[in-house]
Amino acid sequence: MKWKTILGLAAMFGFGAVLFVNFGSQVGGYMNFEQAARTGASAHVVGNWADGRPTHYSRAQNVFTFYMRDESGAVHKVRYNNPKPANFEEAEQLVVQGRTQDGVFVADNILVKCPSKYNETKGLQQQASRSSNPQPSASARQ
Amino acid sequence: MDWLAGAWAIFRKDLRIELRSRYAANTLLLFALGALLLIAFAIGPQPVSARVRAALLWIVLLFAASIGLGRSFVAEYEGKTALLLRLHTRASMVFAGKLLFNLGLVGLLTVVATGVFLLLLGSSVGSPGLFVGTLALGAVGLTGVTTLLSALVARASGGGPLLPVLLLPLLVPLLVSGVGATRKALIGQRWMAAQDELLTLVGFAGATLSAAVLLFDYVWDE
Image 1: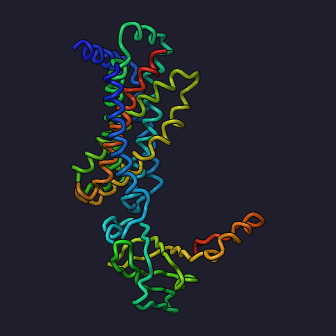
Image 2: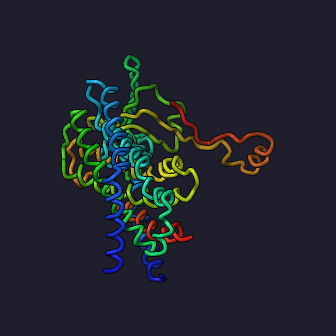
Image 3: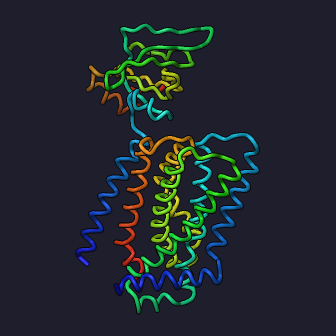
């Protein structure tokens, strides 16, 4: 009886670990551009604007293109069928959601994480947040 | 040897009852065929993407299993034979016999439903090996969870409708990775491309079966 419990628990945790490790990589989490290209499905890629490279917005086609450096350091071209998001240049982090098509990452959505306004005045912010709602530091902009 | 003989006897008993009444097989197959037929009519002649086809197939399989597999334990309680089984056999034998029987039913369901599905939606399978492997792994995982939960639900009065409610949240990992791997099989990718999904299915089947082996004693014996 004891035997069975130990063996069963070990098997359960072993298979459970296999399940969670592999399931996690399918449903969520961030990828880099290489993984996103390999899956071919919709993916979230986190990174920064490669600010040495030019950005371009075509008013006629309503297409914004820029280059983004992902967490592995690879730089990839991103196309976004919308105007440039606000605060794009100040962003400390970008998350693009979309899929790779013909070597270009086509984003359906861009999340721009801006630096917090309250970084220097932490004490003041805590006092202020008691009386009113705190400002969110990360915001999603279409 | 004794244990195997006991489990085998329970399997044969269930199989014989099933062959006389055909209750579970009829429920499973009629539901699956009806749902697939309606899907084929609803979709019409337009081609559907591989992801949608894979999702439809798995949803039909999961719902059919959740409706049809609850019967065998309920029948033991309704026929007042549960006490007899408890006196004469150990819990693990009952579980092994029922598991084998349910595996047979799910196997039958999967083969028939997949055949009809491929015929009705006229879709070709890009890599048949991966397709069969995915369905087999999915069927084992599905059987493991369903057998344990149907034993649990049979104890509750009027527990029939409870099974799908309890079962479907647990089946989310199976559904997501089954659909992912099936999509890849339909569009003809190789085994390596579906590695994550297949390992998830293996992990799901193993975890649910070992949990079921551990927990069944408590469900069966008072």
